[in-house]
Image (tube, rainbow, N blue to C red):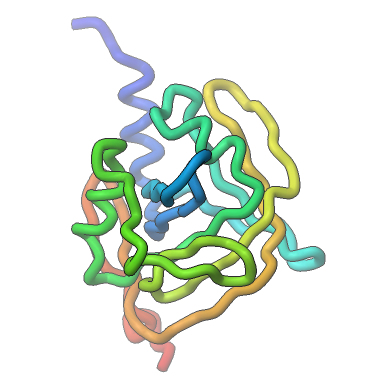
Length: 164
């Protein structure tokens, strides 16, 4: 049996537990698009910068690669269905009642934290585009977060770590 190094690498990276977010942006023309992302990373406090990675084969590549303003919602533990929905291009559309403009960026109304961002830099790296955003504003809400580990969704609660 021949080894599939790409799949093995994916499985190895799947051992890194992450949170789950939905990045949102306006489509060229009209409407909003959402994409499930677990590559969100804090880059800098001064200025406040975050990054995420967009695959160059994504059906939503043009929308997100060209977006100047975009939002991030860190999903709550009860939002697995929402994460699965926005993981598929066929169900990417964000309905008007599901989002709001926050500091000039479209963001899902739900989540345990939300960020309004403006694209700061873009870098091609392998088969992905790294999008770095300047955080224009953010807000946080109480509650457990949705997590992703080895291909499965779960939950992380502050009480699991002794925080109140």
